[in-house]
Length: 558
Image (cartoon, rainbow, N blue to C red; front, side, top):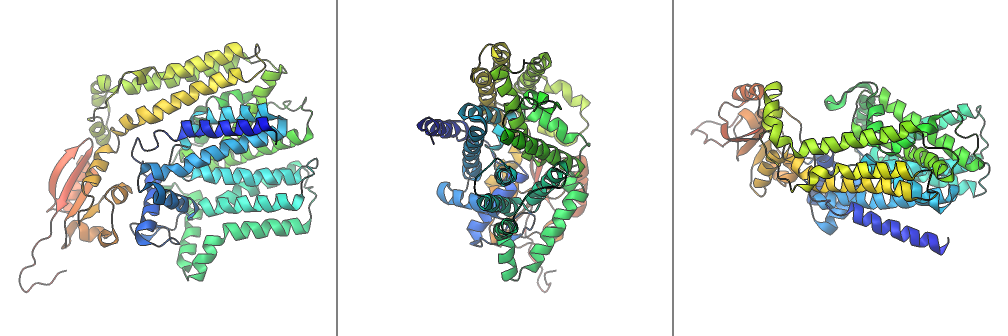
């Protein structure tokens, strides 16, 4: 590797640290996913049981443990807090940018690698995910790396050791399975099937390479499952498989959506790369491509993009990060198109410039509206039927003033890109565009998100934190949450989950009840726990307490 490339990679690491580390702990973890995984890591530390994933110290069989192990390691270093829960994804972000640079460098040179890095880090959701505490950044990186090495295996022009490529592909796909489950392999498998049909069911291979691939996949992907079987935990494996099947067939936990949900998410969420990538979907995009290896890689990226997008459009559970594996192929397609603009092979279509400006304005207006929300929310209240939402709006944010103008960074970046593309044959146009997005997202995550949280979960988390260290039960009937476990630092002695007993039974210690403050819930609680005492109501939540009652002499506890 050239000295220049080593310097560039060092620069990527430094910039990644500056972008992704600051503000990691500026806002509480969000229900459900962030707190779900962080709580499982915390309970591993408390219980000393590093094999079983747990929630409320009961087996949680929905996810394998690899990402949670990473959070455990982080918490051992930084303590049990938001920074530690999110730090593994900061590491993932830096690793991802280095991976993209090196793959891009191998395809078209260092400048193309940098171009891909800029478009990935400079898109809204990819940037945001590296400052989160969810599983998907590592999961997607492992899938992508597994697919990448298989692409090299199937590339006739790649003279690298085919057995090594097969082994690395199986290894990283196995890590994907160990991170989130079999869907990691399913994405690869479906993409491979599409490739086979496109290639007329022809692909040269050696059986020893197939064996190496399968062995590596099973060893890495099956590690946790094998350990569970050796410990006799057959029910965990059964429940895990049942859950994975249900996830594809039903709307899990109410996460439904319309069929084009993920098309919309990618279009708006991977801005600006999603806009620049649009010409890549032309049937003649590869007409002038000189490199067979690059064309081969391009086709695989296009196949992977459509497989992921259509797969999760079919799945009935709709969650924003389900289509996040599309970020890799989509940003590659954007880099491919932007490279042609740089080389003068094609001109920037007017519709791309218009769309970049329009979406920049949309984001700018959204931030402006958020920062001015307290001034006009009173006019909205009479038109909102959701009682919980109205309660949330009672919160008040604190702004410094500069946040309202954050959207201008996006607009300035888009204008610079439009004006410079075609005039400059270097990275400056894309660098300006990406810098605008990265600065916009940096400010949004660091300064805007903590204020927005005040309108959602802040009141509840404040209550849970006040119960840290108290010997009590905490229960959240009528809505699903993991926040009360993490933020009250629940211990095994306080993991009672029997709702009937907590609401109506004889208690041995106080039980605090947190619920969404709606008329329906208040009536329901009056029926379920008539002796519950209202403590206070705040920003859409109501907090109650049930106290132990002395058992009359001669009467036994029910």
